[in-house]
Amino acid sequence: MHSCHEHTVCIEDALQTAHRICEERGLRFTDLRRRVLELVWENHGSAKAYDLLERLGEDYSAKPPTVYRALEFLQENGLVHKINSLNAYVGCSHPLQHQDCYFLICSKCQEIKECCTSQVANVVKNLTEESSFVPSRTTLEIEGICQDCRSNQKYNINKS
Image (cartoon, rainbow, N blue to C red; front, side):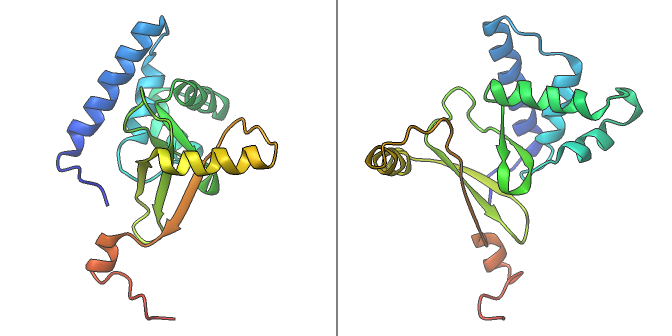
């Protein structure tokens, strides 16, 4: 589902961007925050907090609240998104401009693609205005089967 050919480049770009954002905002990009972000980016799927905790291992002797605080920091600064339906996190592919996004979640390969368009945001804005509702946060998650899984016959649409 992703066009990433060299995943290590994706990870390094995400870490460099995070470092730059933290530096510009006067925030500390601690070793733990860096490692959590790196672990989230290790694949294009999602990462659950307890899986991250386990993968941190003894090197950080982290407890669940520590991991959740690191994830909260990364989310507040636009470096990761929370995928509510999975109670998991995914790296943000463009943290300085992640407005108008929605997520495509493949239920077969578990990859998550972040997509952006103002059309979706405009529809949501119009619908909420019609209902005299002011949203504080909008997350649109669409689950299905990606083209790669369909093409590779990992999934047959006609099967019941």
